Length: 231
Image (cartoon, rainbow, N blue to C red):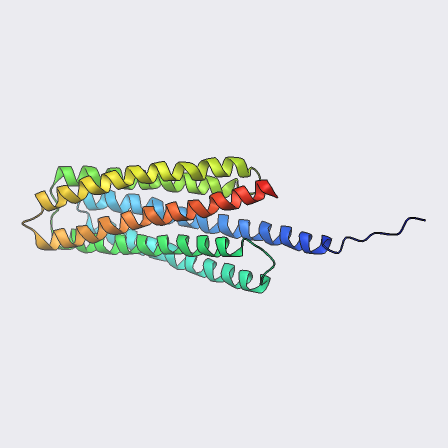
């Protein structure tokens, strides 16, 4: 008579699967909320190049509200991760992505605020600087779009998720190149306006930092995708 066999790991595997599903849903929710910040950031750059301080004040409020919403979602996600304990081997990766995306939202709010100050206190009239800044914001949007697509397909198609996350790096390289060109243009064309130069340097550095944070988040998404394929 064959002995009955019970898989004692079955319940743990089921809990892991449910936990990963929940974390992916929370991750996608934060990414969708962050989309408002990134779109807002592009609008901020447009308003800045048009020196529209009234529009920038409105956009800062909108980007700040998105940041606060994302911070709240991040806290919920971290509490959920804490309750899971050591159930998932990938818990640290999820935590780092949650933190990175929240940091992006915080820096986007910083860009919006400094842009408002810049437009309120000076007139940025360099067409070269405006063009490069607009291109930088446009590429940042492309970078985020690839990351969001990678997060969206993480559960359903991890191979596609990996491919999208891989594209984030190439777009981030484009942002780096624009950053170097823009830095040179700023010092060449705004050297006579110290206030404008200081504020714009903060803005450009923050946009570059956002690009780096999106790349780092994409690297962790790539590992999650590879882990799902392997298991």
